[in-house]
Length: 428
Ligand SMILES: NC(=O)C1=CN([C@@H]2O[C@H](COP(=O)(O)OP(=O)(O)OC[C@H]3O[C@@H](n4cnc5c(N)ncnc54)[C@H](OP(=O)(O)O)[C@@H]3O)[C@@H](O)[C@H]2O)C=CC1
Ligand SMILES: N[C@@H](CC=O)C(=O)O
Image (cartoon, rainbow, N blue to C red; front, side, top):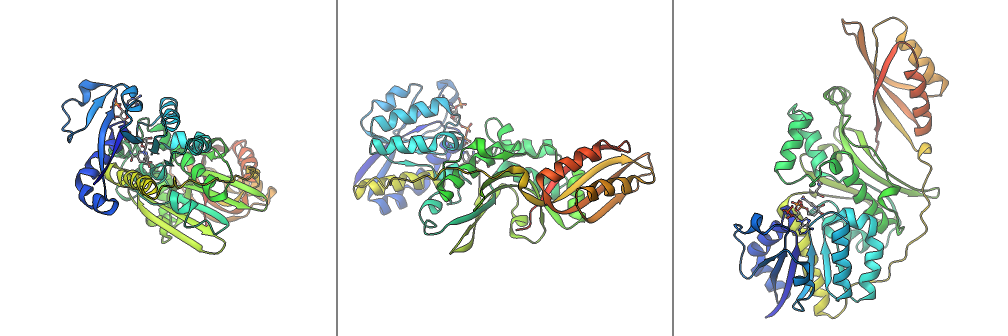
């Protein structure tokens, strides 16, 4: 039987998952590929930290990337370190030496995916990155192959397991934000720096990757307007529940004749909508194509084995391409990116305001909204016994620009202490 030697760069949550998966499913994989996959090297930073780890034969640990790049036996390098600069250098070096690469590194791919794809093609190497979006869910390959007969109009989804885990636990168990984040870290869902998760940057990178492939446009992370979940409080969650909604961090990419819009933000979605029922670290991605209509994919978006499932399937895909002697690569064509003006994007909004508990406050706020032609859909007024009260308003669909201007005006009213939150309602 043919043997293909691979090397892992990194041995954390995902790297360890790859080792475990190959140990568990090796026989099935060998049967399908008529090829044995052997992990020859694992690149780590600190030998002491990993020397007590029980690694299957014949894995060798190294702290020196040269051991891997100079080993002609190694045909595929699996990059599961994270971060951008060092990982990019390693991947470029692999392509130059005609080694194919599988990576789960969305930080890198969202910024340098296209130049790296081009470099891999120049050197006749393969580059696969299924795990970079939504962990174990097959979405990257479907986006550029199974759905490529369509004009993709919309991609919308829950693409970050950590924030979904936090919001689900805050909603269902009344857990605090901090405790839920701690649990997400322990379970291996969160990034090394969880700021990337909670601030929405991780989801922004994923939507940039999917939009690039789906819209054939070279968008990057910087084209995404991002807001995280740091400002979501138990009050917002309670109000959402009372009004028949749940709060989810959504990544949304849309394209029409006016251009492309890319947003990540906490969103109100109606209970009963399929996305509202995506709990824990699960992810779900909706894609709307002009011919296929709506397609939804659901599964584990983070974690050791689910992510390793996507990584190893990429390795198998590379090997299948070896065996029929093609790289599986094609010349992608990218359209010029035309971004929509963010302030023209329209949606209904949930607004929570802390105000003085005095007569006339609501009338004042309503007058400002009316001045901007914004109509109130529903209203909750919490009559506190103290001197402070809370007003919760759902407004009808209005443009981002108008909502921002009206909120500034409302905040300047002497009876309004602060606009505590403004969250888009997504009606999909
Ligand atoms: N965790 C998940 O659920 C998912 C993760 N991903 C992506 O997969 C990648 C890996 O994630 P994950 O396994 O969770 O991360 P971890 O932080 O758990 O593991 C990263 C590993 O890479 C090692 N590493 C980092 N820098 C270097 C370096 N310069 N040289 C050698 N080794 C290095 C770390 O070593 P050390 O132990 O010394 O820190 C650690 O072993 C990231 O790009 C992440 O975004 C994608 C989908 C899901
Ligand atoms: N930190 C990420 C891991 C997978 O991409 C997440 O929480 O989704």
